[in-house]
Length: 284
Ligand code: LIP
Image 1 (cartoon, rainbow, N blue to C red):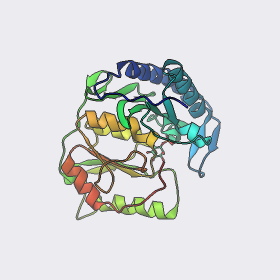
Image 2: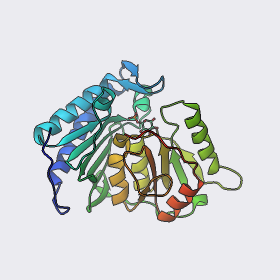
Image 3: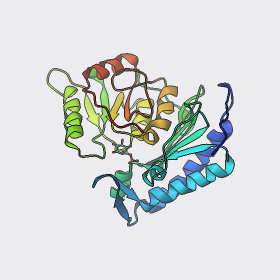
């Protein structure tokens, strides 16, 4: 097992950031070249939870590249977890990886497919990279250094008013009745005659949903059932873009709790948290 490393907050993670951007680009090339080809599709937890050979191949490539550069670091990856590896977030520098966030999009050729790579140190995310491989949009965040898209600074919209907001949410990859009832009832809370946002979008990728809140295209995003690899990198991109990330009930965000709410302002986040019916999920 890797030796835990205690690190002061002021440490620079530039080398890790550069490595993450570089490997995300490499992964992006692999994803782009497979995007329009025929894919071998398998299912995981249920018939709508999809995985392809590209997800597995890209995760292996990212982990072996980063492990070669940072041999003492730990790793959490979506496909490694699916293959039975323990998901354990410790204080040790830990890379949290979703090789293809938006696998259903990838399968169907819908161009919202991202590589999501985060580095957590002492359980704090210090590097976040979300790369839309198809549209060539690189969203990045480094703790204390701001958020960027293709090198240009990005910022949340600052919107506070639900009635003026564009919301983002997802249907998820489970069709469990209790979960689906919750999804539809929560969407209905913000899209009705008495209380309505301007609209609602689902891009099929938590990491991209968060990145689009970070650059002000969407005003808030919430979802129940995501995993730490879906949101770890997006978390830092939103935070560094001036956004707010909370638990869906309005408490502090807990990356392993499978619930996320992020918004362009504290006020909007609180309004949404109050309107949501909550659900507990088994932790990562
Ligand atoms: C996806 C998430 C999305 C969620 C999907 C799925 P994947 O991740 O980003 O928010 O609604 O069910 O979990 O499986 O494409 O990496």
